[in-house]
Amino acid sequence: MLKIGCHLSISNGFHKAIQEAVSIGANTFQFFTRNPRGGKAKDLDPKDIEGLKKIIEEYDFAPLFAHGAYTMNLASKSENTREFARMILKDDLIRLKEISNSYYVFHPGSHVGQGSERGIELIVDALNDAIDKDNDTIILLEGMSGKGTEIGRNMEELKAIIDGVKYNDNLGICIDTCHLYSSGYDIVSNLDGVLDEIDRTVGLDRVKAVHLNDSKTEFASNKDRHEVIGGGTIGKDAIIDIINHPKLRNLPFNLETPNELEGYKKEIEFLRGEYR
Ligand code: ZN
Ligand code: FE
Ligand code: FE
Image (cartoon, rainbow, N blue to C red):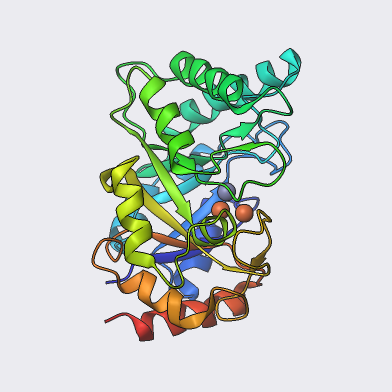
């Protein structure tokens, strides 16, 4: 069965989010661990997370995805910003232990002019500080579109981060179809070639999840503008090939398309119908 869901808010609790997920035919979902702009995380309500495991099992959910705040920049030039990001990362990882079967996804960061080599060094240092040998949470670096000074604009950068982390057994990547296409990986006319390229660099076994988005901008634009499925430059056919590809079809897919619940429901229905 296709593992597919979308981004949902947990501001009204996990039970509400799970109900929503079930109501739109999702069997995974992604949520922000805190306000997407960063800031303080609401304490998890023990009543709300109690029984979560049972519900997740009952509905046969794939892993859930906690997404780190967009403002978290482990590669910042400012020591304060870096420290704040490192604190958020550690705190998120502690909180995630309470939520069964959840992965952590985050944007590696932006080097803001210091150069990608220095940026990668800072990210590696933060991860080595946060991940000890007992870590059992799957942590995923998201591949980025390459806007501004983003790190993770290509597989080589993601690989360099993974290689720098001492306890990297549970460190992998999340590919985002919009970001891949925008950063110059032609998943529309050469999906097999792109997957080979990923395999030669980070290794396909490191790819643990997919963000399924169409893109508003042209190939290799280095922009990050998500579009609804079939409404953008990637298009329906390429997206259908992606969810069915033997090397991807068993991964969990999450939609981050510009949609309300009803729109997500339609996209999930459509994609389930196209899953062979
Ligand atoms: Zn993301
Ligand atoms: Fe994404
Ligand atoms: Fe994005």
